[in-house]
Length: 322
Length: 292
Image 1 (cartoon, each protein chain N blue to C red):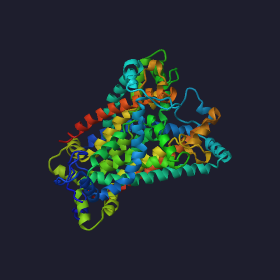
Image 2 (cartoon, each protein chain N blue to C red):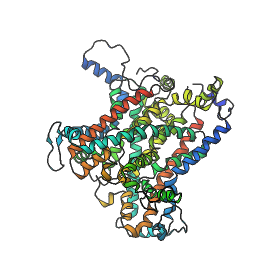
Image 3 (cartoon, one colour):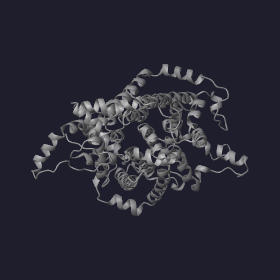
Image 4 (cartoon, rainbow over the protein chains, first blue to last red):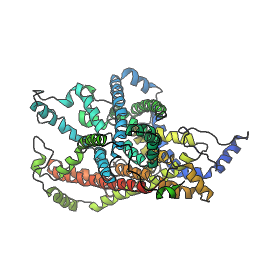
């Protein structure tokens, strides 16, 4: 099996290794199968299960998005009607899209940078302190539905921690109904979402930093790298490109899919739909109104939004350290 | 690879390019943010030791004043009374979590190795589909998933939870990204020495990406430990610990103290796994020199 050094090859680009003579398609297919049989054997178990339990359901959902489906009767094909209804008749969907884009543009980049920054800073500590600090920073992610703690903070009466504090300081006289006032709902969701965002990407960065070759730093110092920021840009970041890609996809996907925080803090539905996101909208139609076709259409639109953003970000990340 | 030589070199200063002032500023910053992030741990631990009157204290307080272990002793009384022996719930969850983790780590890593290191037709599309699938909201695939499970006759068995866990996208993506960093020369050398592809995968690739699969174990443990199994499993004796714990908490106000104790106990298991894995990640890397 021929393979050549491909460390610097762009992600996922497909290039056939040898100059193929013009043979019949069937012959080439058979030869590829024999030549790369070990690769295919290693991939087969995962690929089969993945197709069955992930690809197939997604394809079925996309098909369902073109139907009227109430989960009792057999789906009835209605073409693009779900989509036209979504964009032309559903005002709340537009609020949801606006909120989701706001959440994604703030929590996406900020959480991504925070994940890396904290992983990098923690990596400077001695190993024992490092394990402890990783736990502390990862705590909100590991504790499940812990955001109810924020309900106590932002409670609308005078005993809420934030209200109590502000009143003691004399900044406000009357308690503020934080989670029931339209103007405050989105900022609070953003804060809590950021607090929760040191998750999968953060752990991947922690692990990624362990694989950076330590001798590179010593070599860098000899070559004239003078401070930790230069070291970060010229050595650490380029060595971690695969993890940076991974983190970007994970953090962006999370940023677009915010729903739990909104439901638990702002209520479901929230006051005047001020905290509605694309996913809460989807949950509303899927699990409360039983309009599965419409819910699937929302999922498909969200999928396309995430896809576009991710492609853009990946292009950007290829430039790191160049 | 000049690994043996490198190991014999005297250790240089631990890290170069660090100023004392910069260190102090950064660690101060870390401490402040860390205190903020540790809030849920502090809260959960304090709550579990609060007597009932303190749990309902108004205005609420974060720290316990008269710690008690009543909540835990009440919990053990309750567990003794449950209809399905409580050990059964524990077994169910441990079995689901263990099988899911082992299966996913093995299958996803085996698939990630050729994707990261070999060129073959279908490689690009396969990888892209896996990454794309991360972007589809799971809420709408629940119904198709249920239909597939029922065609396969897996509804109301452990396998309805375990087998889909084998096929998560996350692990394949994570493992592939880390495997990409393994120097090709290392694999070439093994091949010249006559190692088969399977041998290379198991004895060279996997040990070199230990931080990756240790991280994956943490993530999967969390997903499966707290997984909502109610969609596919109906028999009481097959249900998970998480479900049983929620039933206890559903007892309402009278069970609030017990609920806090349950929350702490349930949380402590992933945390233990987390701490163990983290120390493993740090330990492996102190002794290996995988880069060229």
